[in-house]
Image 1 (cartoon, rainbow, N blue to C red):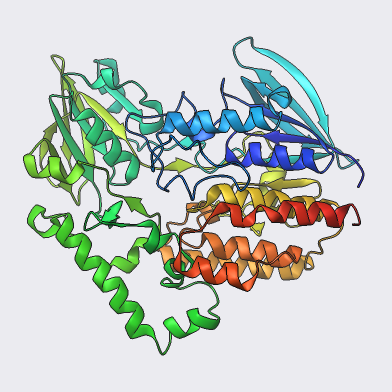
Image 2: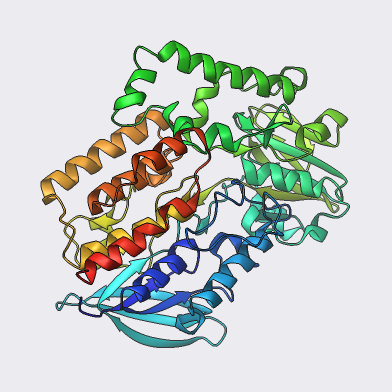
Length: 497
């Protein structure tokens, strides 16, 4: 294979695993990371207090690099960042990374190559770079989304503070203050639990309630046996149903619904949702509509104690600050104290460094990314995305995705024609829109269908897992090590052995 110079944007799981794999296959890489360390969402500049992984460490590792044995089952954000730094050391990636380098533009020339401008953020110096291939790995959690609150400008001018959870990195900022946390996802509840120990009061403002999964059901059964298996994925309806999944959603639907119903009953009892008035009032199956959120340890207990309050089915209508005291008026008519507002309200996704005409090629009018296999824009050469597929096993999706891109640029993987690619993209976006009620992260959210997506990539590369491995994964949590051989097999094939 001809050696290419690959430009990679982003130093999280996607960018780092891609850099390692591209180098393994003989390419040279330059990775640009706007922060001063690797990690992406796990970077020190973005870690909110209380941040931990959703997955247990045994399932959230890269295939050939397990976590240190001394790590807890749910590593902290700092530990994940250290893990990724160690990954860079292990595979000699640090010399290929340009820290504090922000890509400000990337233009494709007539020769198909990419010409980029990069700014060294702390020096304000700009440099030019040329690449044979551009890989965008800036992630779907790159730009914090904060709602527009009426009165926010005056609130801030008079001493109030509004942060996104990714911007709230110092718990001391909440000391002695009345804190309003907007949202009911994992980051919101993590932050609420963390600041409740130092704040004057903590109120979670939840527009809607969602189901949350305890790390251990009945404090005994690790949730990884429920959702981090092939059977766990099969309980939710994928685009096309085959084999055992077709049975579970057809003749065996009673069994499937019974299994989900039992989980719903356990969670309701264990978290005392009825007693606390926090039952979502919708089936547990709806957990697959957006993202699966784990229960933050101590969160419901503190609600029961009154340490944390939840203003449910409402949102902030107006913010005001007077004499150093902040208040938030809610659209249900209530008013809460709020000197500090922290928003776990999701993310905006864009690639501002690409030219407008290129953005128009990779997105539709609704802003959905139109990517075949969540990676390739139709009709655009020498450009790919990796990590644009939010999932339980995002790190494995990134790793296998990098192998898929390698196979593609080597000419050994054949894509369907443009018409078929667009048809598949249309079908996927329509399915996402229907199953998530339109809340599908602009076409990038594949939770909880992580393994389905990996399977599709492996089938494309003719690297499918053996039947015994697949059977084991039906009943047991996914072991990333099961996928380590994919790199070896593909490398052997590319060398002609």
